[in-house]
Amino acid sequence: MNKNIQPRARDRSTAIAAALLGTAAFLAAGAAQPVTLPSVVQELVAPPAVPPRITRTTPANVVVHLTVEEVEREIAPGTRYTFWTFGGTVPGKMIRVREGDTVELHLENLAGNKLPHNIDLHAVTGPGGGAAQTLIAPGNEAVFSFKALSPGLYVYHCATAPVAMHVANGMYGMILVEPAEGMQPADHEYYVMQGDFYTSGAYRAAGLQNFDMQKAIDERPTYVVFNGADGALTGPRALKARAGESVRMFFGVGGPNVTSSFHVIGTIFDRVYTEGGKHYQENVQTTMVPTGGATIVEFTPRVPGDLALVDHSLTRAFNKGALGILDVSGPERPEIYAKGIKRPLAGAAVVATKAVAKPAAAVAVAAAAKAAPAAAPAAQLRGRAVYDANCSACHQPDGKGVPGVFPPLANSDFFQQRPYEMAHIVLNGRSGELVVNGEHYNGVMPPQDLSDDDIAAVINYISTDMNNGKPVLDADKVRAMRASRGK
Image (cartoon, rainbow, N blue to C red):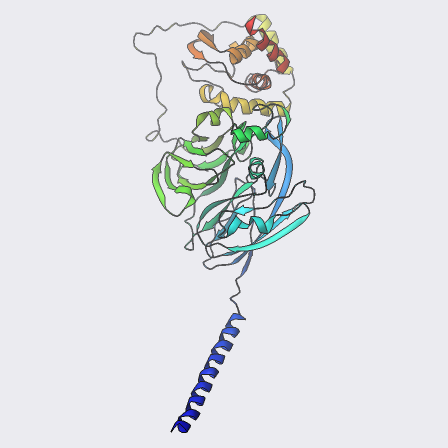
């Protein structure tokens, strides 16, 4: 009986073995034929621009070529600094992929650089975020890949020791992982990052400035700026939109130390995707963004005018450079935002005066000034930056002032006749009555914490650009004024 069963057991064992072999062969065949993703080369553009919104609905293999470039350029008008960058810009160029994509990152440390660098991307799931795989000396390239598993807005930065020094010199940027379902279109998308810089000289000190490690350790930044420079998002570089158009800002903080109380003066965020995640809060005035963190804010300007981007820790905005402008054009909407009326309080004494003719000497000075050459471009840009950061809030961007409150600086008879006195006011402050263009003003202006070079630059800017005059003083004259204060 056992003899009759044994052949059947052998047959059954043979059949099972054959089945297992067949399954293994099937699996091996499947493993030998992986799914091939379409390849897409990432388009990289300089901030504040961003790559276009993703419209494909399936994953891809996204190839990113990112360079490391050590470059010297202005951090403020007349002030230069050696930045370490991704892609030659601060922040580094934004990477934009889709949830489920495989990212093939090529990091190239250009041969002309002096130091090794690498990259740590917060969107990477794995130890070091890619830092170990990409640590390379100048003249080398590193390649590694990762899967974009989680949608969100993430910071990337250099993680080469000393890490804080590399980040403080501008080595940070962001990578956006769009959700698989995509993002709604917006009329404008902008890319802005805040960073803190530590220079050996004071804020806006002229010339090439070195990195100050002790200031960084003590967390005493000389500059706190948007997009790598004082004034990077002002004047001709201001962001643009029209009233009624939707705006989406990808905002992050590179650091290395200072968080941001991000606020746009003159609007309310319709949606804030807190810390760059998928969920949002509505109707937000100010949002806190940590160092190494990000947020997405969406809003629609309703009326024309300049909306100011600031870190609402306000000395950073007005004394260290964290100030940008969104220039909104379009028709006035008085039903939303009326211009208002300003008038004296009932019973207040109002002194009516007539404009006094300029003395002949003043007329001669003004005539000579009209024929004088304009200030040098670098000095003019510096003066404009100082004015925008310190004077425009009260005296207005165009220098016309606020009637009855802040006297005009543009086309000002007071300034044209007494530019040196204006420098003394900036340096020492002033309280009490003064008359400008026949109008009486009675207020207080505190002394301004500006360097000698900055005071000279802003006075010369007001003279040349707002009063059709000529440069009237230099830093040495301001230094002499400062020295004479105690005498």
